Image 1 (cartoon, one colour):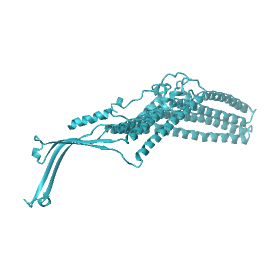
Image 2 (image 1 turned 180 degrees about the vertical axis):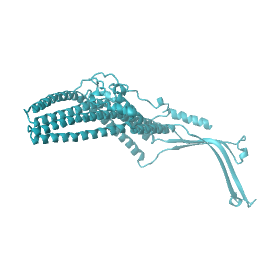
Image 3 (image 1 turned 90 degrees about the vertical axis):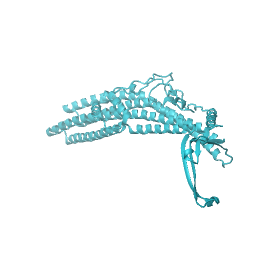
Image 4 (image 1 turned 30 degrees about the vertical axis):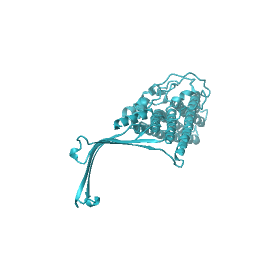
Length: 485
C-alpha cells in the first residue's frame, strides 16, 4: 500500500471512529419555580446591552474606560486566549503531522573492523536522504483524542464565560464605586453645611453667654458639637478620597479632567440618572443565562468528556509512522531515478496489566464529574439566593427610603422649632443641640439608605445575569468555530 493511500485510510478511520463520552444530561435545577414572595411569569423584556440599564452619562464613561483598561479583565482575556490555544493543540492531535527532512551521514571506518583483507586503510561510509513522513500518528478509533479535544473546547468556553462574568462584575463594581463616591461627596457637603450651622450657633451661644442668658454649660455643649462635626467632616473627606482611589483602580487608568469634572458635578445621589424599573414576576429559571452558571455547566461538560478519554484508554492504540523520499550513498545520484525509498511502520499497543491504573483513572474521572455536578447545583442555588435577596431588598429599600425622608422632614421641623424657642429664651440650648444632632443623623441616614437602594438595583441587575430575559443564547460548538471533532 502506498503511503498516501495508507494515510488516507487512517484519516477515514479517524472520522468514522466511535467516541466513549457518556451522554450528557443537564442536572435538574434544585431551586423553586418562583422567587420567594413573587409570582412566576413568562419573562420580561430583555436588556441586550448594559447601556440600557446604566443610563447615567458619567457612569457610562467610567464603565467604558474600565472595560478598556481594567487589568483584571485583561488577565481574564489572556486566560481565554490561552484556553483557545490549548483547544487548538488538543484538536491538532486528530490529524497527522507531516514533517520534511534531509539527512547526510558520513562515517569513517577501518578495514580491520570489518575483517577486510584488501586494505588496511580507512574508508568512508556515506548516506544521503531527502523526504517527508508522519511520526507516531495515533488513529483515534475509540475517540480518546476527540474526547480530550472536546474537553479542551468546553474548558475554553468556561474560561470565555468566566471573562464575561468578570466583565459583568466589573461593570457593577464601577457603578457601585461611582455611587459610593457620590454618596461620600454628598455626606461631605451635608457635613460642611452642618459645620457652618454649628459654627453660627456656637458664636450665638458664646455671645449670649456674655449677656448672662445662657450658662457656661451651654457654651461647652455648643463647642463640643462643633468639634464633633469637624471630626466627621475629616472622616467623610477621607472616605471620599478612598472611594475615588478605588474607582480609579477599577477603571484601570487615572481619570481624565473631563471625567473628573463631570464626577465632581454630582453633588447628590439625586443627580445620578435613575435606573430603569426591573419588571415584577420574573421566573426563577431565567438565571440559567448567568455567565457563571453557564461556565459551571461547561466545566461539568468537560468532566463528562474526560470520562470518554479514560474509557478509551482501555482499548488498543494504533500508531502509524511512515516516510517517503529518496536515498543514496552518493549525493550526486540522490534525485536520479530508482533512488526512491519509503517505509510504513504501524504499531498496536494493548494494555494487558497495569495494576489497576486505568481503572483508577476512570474512577477519578467519574468522581470529578460528580464533584462538578455538585458545584454546578451550588452555583445555581447561590444565584437564586442572590436574586431573591435583591428582590426582597427592592421593595423594602424603597419603603425604607420613604420613611427616612419623612423622618428628615420631621426632624427639620423639630430643629427649626427648637432653635426658634432657644432664641426666644423659652428652652435651653440642649434642646436645640439634640434636635440638630437628630437632623444631621437623619440626613446622613437618608444618604446611606438612598445609596443602598441604588446599589441594590445594581446588584439585582448583575444577579440576573445582565438583564431579565429568560432566553439563553445558543451555545457554540467546536465545529461552528471551524474545528472538526
